[in-house]
Length: 99
Image 1 (cartoon, rainbow, N blue to C red):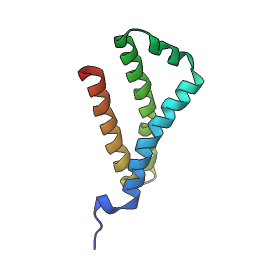
Image 2 (cartoon, rainbow, N blue to C red):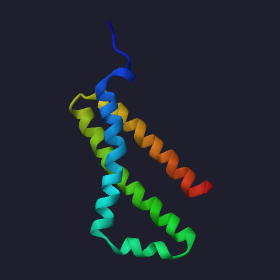
Image 3 (spheres, rainbow, N blue to C red):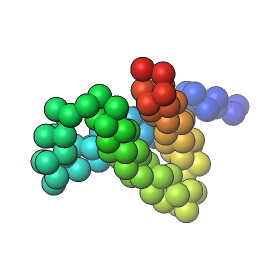
């Protein structure tokens, strides 16, 4: 009997990694560049643009993991990562253009 994609534990691990890794990337970037925190006191449009760039750079970790897992034939992990990356990108779009 074939398992559903949603019940596969590797898929959920990919979703978890896709959720946590960009947050870790943003945290590491802000720790290595503390001056980015000082920019938060400027005009709203400038802050929004910089925040979008920081979060987008955090997604690069997801892209690297996605291709690594494809290379290792872990398609379910890659699907979970891809889902979370797309959800992050939709959230970034809403934050940047609609808020």
